[in-house]
Length: 410
Length: 147
Image (cartoon, rainbow over all chains, first blue to last red; front, side, top):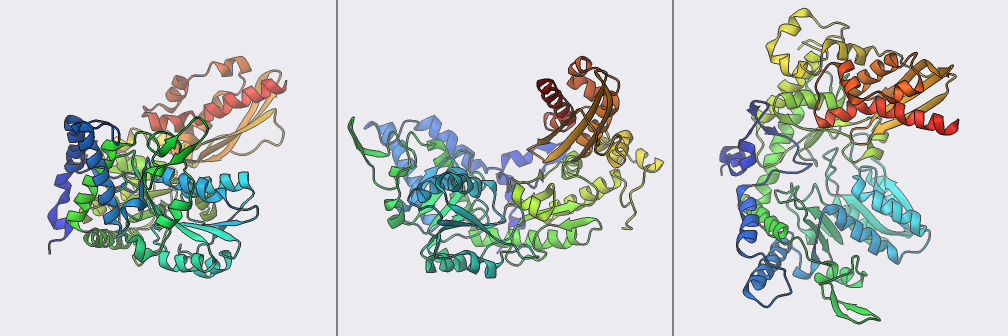
């Protein structure tokens, strides 16, 4: 079988053909957002060119075509993660998916009951719970990290108790690259009668996801981090649980019957999709998933694992470079944070940019984690299907250039 | 590669290295020098106002201490951490404001800061360059509100 490197998928991504600062663009910021294959861009423009109409409304052909394409996108996503059609809700982002859960899951909770998160959460899986806990008198607890940047599962056992109603963890850390043991956490949560929420913003783009095999109750993900467009997020929930939850947003399309006095709500999944959804974006997401299916998620994972191993080895031997995350590729993936001694992350990123390399510098929307690690920020290189070993070599050379400019090394 | 300690002055041969020219547009000698050896670094034990600001995008932080005397800046100092641009501009600004009146401080513009730095910047790095000025102007607001 050809490796992804040999397949040269870069050709499928129009934006990657451009130059940056006079050099071929090396895009190493896919954990922020990925580039889009031509097929995604075409699917979205095709929707606007040939079938733009509101869904679930008109009886005319256009509206029926749009409705069919939108519902097909739902079916596609559901199949991709081994969920039922009624179990997949489209939101505008993974952030909205997590907010939906934070609002609706905490609604019935009693004062003093607990939400368990981890120290490695992105703001989007921390701030909603923290703020609702403040409003509703709930307690938020955090599972600690081990010295090698993994979740301390012994501490998880202590944190998840009879008072815990929700455990919410990232599938993969957007800072450390650590992949968390979801099935184990699901068992711990379920043993105490709590539900397990997984923030899969970094999981679904990089790993094969089977929500049934993972054993989680809810799974949130983002379209634009997995080759799809912005403005579309995914929320998976077990049908029995979604049925019990109250709606999050009220409005059109989510209702069954409305009078001046009261309303009843639509069936799943539409109960959670108020208003005209992002139809073109849903269709674009489906095209992205088709693209990923054509490669195979096992292949995607293998490719990113190969790049991760390669980058960890190369960066690991650089003087003055510290990797902030597990040092081995075991149970981690292609998000690699590092610090360069004596050079601020933004300055590293600026020098890299002058070499045509796009990386993220800063706190990565994980300020509590940065404080815990005693860092103002890290520089982060992250991979997707289109990246290559040669790009990792260019990254290493550009870091050496930054060190030379700032008067370190040679 | 041999690991060398940071040097105060980079070697002359480095400046001739054509590969470095682009990034050197921003990271000029005086900027890097101020980054490694900031002016007016530290806290003041007695001050007329202090103010801390941060750039939420990158976490750059500056805390500014200013002592007024006879309605003029007698002393200014700062502590902080962040990129070379934000820290160098704090050094330059704290030098620049000494002896100036509050009214004169309010006239300082982004162009003044850029000309002090002597480099051109894009919109994202501009926020780094202007953090010290933002901190100063907010501090003056506090100071005047307290008077």
